Image (cartoon, rainbow, N blue to C red; front, side):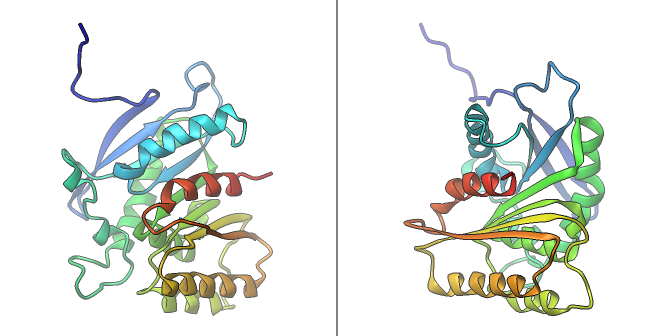
Length: 257
């Protein structure tokens, strides 16, 4: 007779809970450790996954298969999400945490600075202290509003990560702000070699594709010697279907030799 348990687990994972008193929010931090981790003393690159309530399982299992094919190096995954006990709670407060600008009609929006502070001063130091990470080899991936936050981090504190994956970023409210930062040649965007991957689905609204093209063009015009960038349009993909494919394509791109 078959036995059932309360939930399906993902092999190689564990979870920590961190709280931001400033934001007033509890966060779930999901960790996936690569196959060789337990039997080695090595340190590993780390990939931070935003919207982990949706994407952590996808990233973990996809990364494992890519490792089998020797397409990417062994990495640690750290997924950031909100407490949730049903599917409606999964999005949590991403509208607040991932938006740099307060937007009319989006409740509590404009909290990206506070979330970035928490990421820099609490989440990253906690992970580096408790897991064998390579602090000089951090990646961050986000899609939609998460992609917006990835770009905001790149614009404001590029030193935090060495590899950035911003897929299908929701640029409509912050494009002008980003362009002003890019076109300010009195300030460097990056101080050391940095990789940036951008993507969007071919079936997304034309305005979103134009926004990303505009951002990409401005970055290319800077001709920054420290920045290696790749921007792709994924055929037959919508805003909602592009996520998993963007992760695979982006991970390959930022770790490409």
